[in-house]
Image (cartoon, helix red, strand yellow):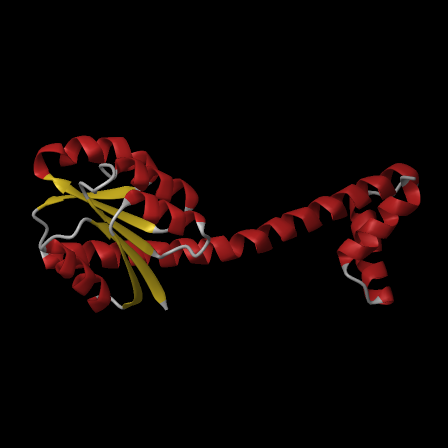
Length: 190
């Protein structure tokens, strides 16, 4: 279930924000009235998928909250502010990946940005899942190459001979190439 935080002082736009988020499929919506409470929830661990900050807030403006949220969560962040400072805030917050919208914001504009952020988060989530697998494969290749170097050094194998030796030992002993490589390194590099 998608989780959203709406950080806003009570206002007329408050209901519109919540409605737009729910229409876009967010079932869990936490409505927060101040930065201190939002920070507490963010540091609490349950990271939302999207955070909408409707400035100004009762205890601070909201820019610092957007920066903190960007640093501590993987949530998509939308900051809504008055039109006269929107460009300046967009420049300041662009490095954090925060989307800045100038008030007044139509429901259609907000929904479009929510969909865009949700789509980008889905892509990033897929990339994050691939990263550990890729890192494991790189580490495996590093260990195998190290074992080949050891075989070439101590047994005077050529690189193809060392490669073939590791492959053959893995098949014969029903082990992975990495296990064979680790055993070779352990045996010769004491």
